[in-house]
Image 1: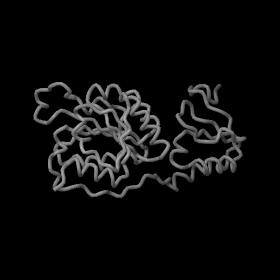
Image 2: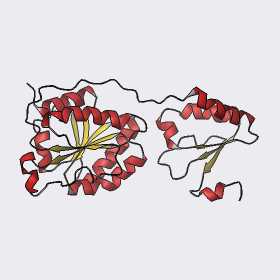
Image 3: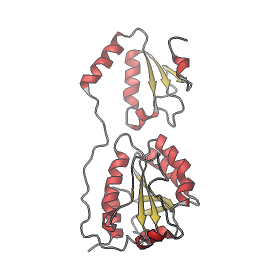
Image 4: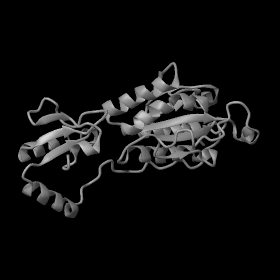
Length: 261
């Protein structure tokens, strides 16, 4: 029978989560012992850059990535960049260790007394498994939550003594879709409005490119022959800034764009 650690890495392997960014401490050492040779661990000197590197990696590859952080104070170090990953819609699966289950009641050093609250509100889902054998299945759910639109960070708290426990029922790898389809009925009114507009304009954010819509946005703008503006304070462009229809970035103030001004 496989251990929780072995089942965890089996799930990660099947989900192609074989690159891990992190800054571990003692509560994470048990998960990382006998580290699989087909995985790569990118070590950071502190938790904040570990999350920043993972954020960039997820955006560059378009794939989910594991981030391994230290409990409690380490999560506090990382929170600012977890917020950035949230706004970047980066599918990060963040794990942090936790004290052994038998010691949680007396709250010794390195106990995270509120493990699910520290990363909020900048995660889509936060969970500490009720049983050790649920850790691999929690990774499967964390992956699904992270990559389904809108993508974003999720968090798992893993007690350090869970990894050596037996895992009698490893989870099945689920099939899921990472794309959302537009409703043709709701799109009809949008098409009608654009077709009849005398002076349409498009405001495009980074999520357009993130979801693979870059070329579609260019074709739509050229068909409409309309001005294109970038949404304010976006982390990535959604439209080519060298295109003749591109007008620049809108300022972050609604009243400035009102028809009454």
